[in-house]
Amino acid sequence: MKRRDFVQYLCPSMAVLTLANACVQADEPVMVLSTSEIQEFERVSTKYNDEGYFQEGNQVFVNLSNPAYSKLGNNLGYVNILDAGVLLLRTDEKTLKAFSNCCPHQGIRGAWDLVNGRFRCDNHGNSYNVNEVNVVSCSSNSVSGGLQRFQVLAYQNYLKITKG
Ligand code: FES
Image (cartoon, rainbow, N blue to C red):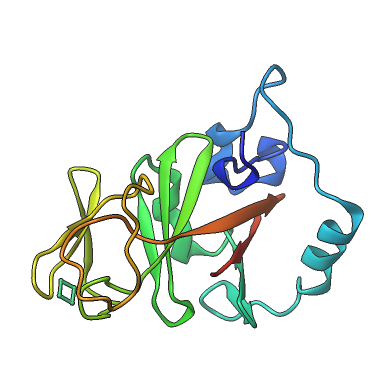
């Protein structure tokens, strides 16, 4: 299993209540963060803005306990962190995926709807998959294909998304 395919919630009591049922069962694979990765989460713990995220370079840290992310408690719930350039999508009870929110057609970032498991940009109506099939770049004039996916690491109820 690729690291980015897997978002782990170590314990329900540590997670946002709405995400409590996302706790990983004991017989499932466990991803262990390194000490330096944990320290990085702790280093930014006081830096989250009112919208529950903190951006530093190409990394975006997200505090899932912020009400802005409550939709992620539901399967296929999604949140567009517009200014951070990230679309977050829950694909099953244990997995959150992160994608670029830049439309591969003409680069609009704020017109996304999830329709039949694909993100549709309402600017011109083109839809893009979330399965990394035929990934197409931001503003590349592409009218089909897949959105660029970003790596996600989880620690307690925090995420670190690495863009690019
Ligand atoms: S800018 Fe998104 S479909 Fe055209």
